[in-house]
Image (tube, rainbow, N blue to C red; front, side, top):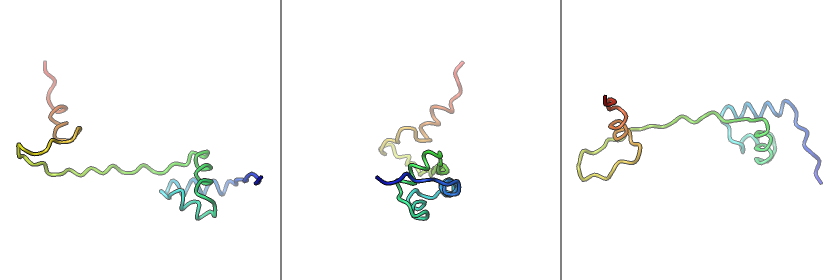
Length: 89
């Protein structure tokens, strides 16, 4: 049976800082000479999280053709029709 790995504060710091800078688990494991799964398990115990990914919102031109395909649910044009209307008295 393999021996339990002894984690040092320096190794923990490497995992946390690399993950916070946006590195993947695989690249962290490669840099440390460990398997990806080993680093994932330790990172989860340390609560090392990646930075949130920025939301990409690109508005497309909508055709005014009455025979166009329907807009998807939550599309900004249709949503504005619902949410921007004044509340009736």
